[in-house]
Length: 303
Ligand SMILES: NC(=O)c1ccc[n+]([C@@H]2O[C@H](COP(=O)([O-])OP(=O)(O)OC[C@H]3O[C@@H](n4cnc5c(N)ncnc54)[C@H](O)[C@@H]3O)[C@@H](O)[C@H]2O)c1
Image (cartoon, rainbow, N blue to C red):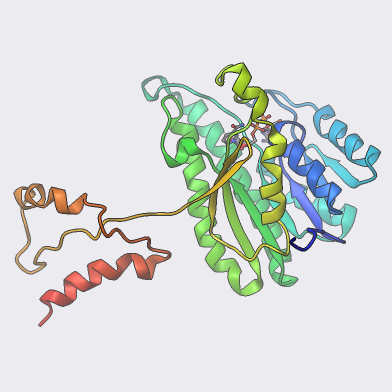
């Protein structure tokens, strides 16, 4: 049996916690002893309007269950205000769960700038603003856990979600670099790609499956990633319906050409099978590992 996951005096910010997955995360963090900032702007699923009651309701639920929480109604694009709220209410911040999100699905042909921009602003800029405001505090105390919410729509693509997929995989790029920059200050950074039955997915998933994809089935992973027990960083986890798996990059060994002589498009075509052959594929963990095969090719031709 593993050690109990407990947050003692730790302070957790969960963005977009007025409903859906964020609500479930906030409730579970509180149940494990965390003091929680329940952030939610309370707008529609496509990011219109605002309503304080979403966050307030979740705070009431946490308090009724004996937990500690405060509500915050700012947009994640005002991340500094959310972090300031955590500092004012609890004097610190230890864990940031970037969960707030919206959808503006449209085929790329019909995509308008406003849909592209708002999705970018909420998911990417919002996650940046909240995390960037928390970062100096995490560094100073030599402790932090940050979780970003990515999506299979970003990892694999999804018709009608070019804006959303761009934002969601962008968050994994952010995860990888912050994991590197945070490591020496014990700030661990991971991403999840959840599948859950929420207003975001209602109507898209058959009702009998939707019922089973409870948001509560995502939160144990998020709370674990936010805990001291978790020592992993830079991870990406697909999670939902009671299942969790880890994702990693895979790359073929590739084909090498003579850098002095150069090569033609026809040479590329001739090597296409080799370039695309995943037999003996590698799984680079960082830039240095990623460049290994390219460097080996250069060395082959160096004088
Ligand atoms: N549900 C899924 O299957 C699924 C799949 C992949 C990724 N996600 C991601 O998980 C996260 C949670 O989604 P959900 O399914 O619970 O949807 P949801 O709509 O139920 O919850 C999102 C919450 O974020 C809040 N929010 C939106 N814009 C905000 C802003 N600017 N500032 C503060 N709060 C804001 C909303 O008010 C809402 O309460 C999102 O990032 C979403 O993209 C969900």
